Amino acid sequence: MEAKYTKIVPIRWDDAKGEVVWLDNSQIPWKEVIVSSKDVNRLAAAIKSLEVRGAPVLGEAGAYGVALAANNSPNSSDEILKNAKDAGDLLFKTRPTAVNLGWGIRKIVDVIQKAHDSGAKPTELKEAAIKAAQKIQDENIAASFKMGEIGKSLINDGDVLMTVCNAGALACDGLGTATAPLRAAWADGKRFKVLVTYTAPLYQGARLTAWELHKDGIPIKVITDNATGHLIREEKVTAAWAGADRILADGNVYNKIGTYNLAILLKHHGGNLYVAAPTSTIDPVTKIEGVRIEQRNQEEVRTIMGKVNIVPDGVETINPAFDRTPPELVSAIVTELGIARAPYKESIAKLLSMEGSMAKQDV
Image 1 (cartoon, rainbow, N blue to C red):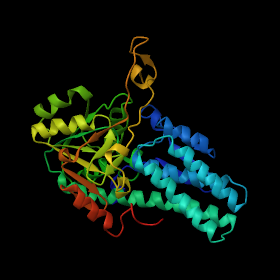
Image 2 (image 1 turned 30 degrees about the vertical axis):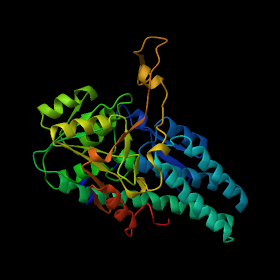
Image 3 (image 1 turned 180 degrees about the vertical axis):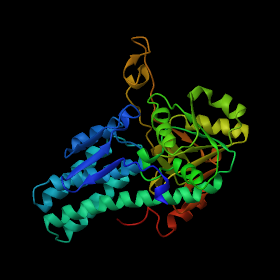
Image 4 (image 1 turned 45 degrees about the vertical axis):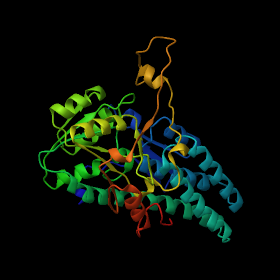
């Protein structure tokens, strides 16, 4: 099945060099820049600057970052564990809203802790960390293909679809999350159109989602964010597909700023908002009041991609990275284990209890 799709590798571990290698999202579509580093601080900077981004890939990056710190450590089990925990703390602070980042970090720290407590040799701790991080990536890729197969049932011939931000392979590995059903449906012969929103201020829809879907030959048109209401009505948009950076147990979805706007517009016009995310993105513990919406650098709003200043000097800006879409505006949540629908407290709990849930399984 994979042969039908353009393969995009957003991040990986280089065994020969002991480095983390990633595709710099900030340079696309102008050029494809591959970065490699043995420095956890460099990886943390890449996450903060969105060279590496997207919930599932952040889980991989967090895991690889902790494994990198372990691999860089002297051959002392205590030093390996300490450095792994310190790296985890550093990496987590870069993008605190994205639940997968902390999830990936904790997975590898737990692996190292267990190996340490069992008396494993330092080399065994390092090998266990790397293998566990690679397993997380393998599972993300497998989950993306499952989401594609499950979610394609929600797409019909003749649909007009919309996307927000980028929840494709660059952000999620494999087929992506929100793009996985589109790519799987297209590969199966279904034919539809996709309107890709700019997703200002970093234009991740225009730059990244358009780049990915175009590679697969899916017909797309890029639109401005403030054209969405008009085009949902005039183009008779049937659904929008979104990823998620965090999904609460009650079905509240945190995703790129602008998702909430789309949800309201779709509800008014009789369309659907579909969210696709692996179960590792589900946060079964935190309540709304416990989620901190990340405020990003004002310069991202003040300028166009850091190159052209469009805001008068001295004028403040507000730059929230995410918004919260309440469950009553979410038509369905597609995961690697199935589709959750309202009432979400029951359907999400059922998914998390299933064997194979990425939120539950040990690495």
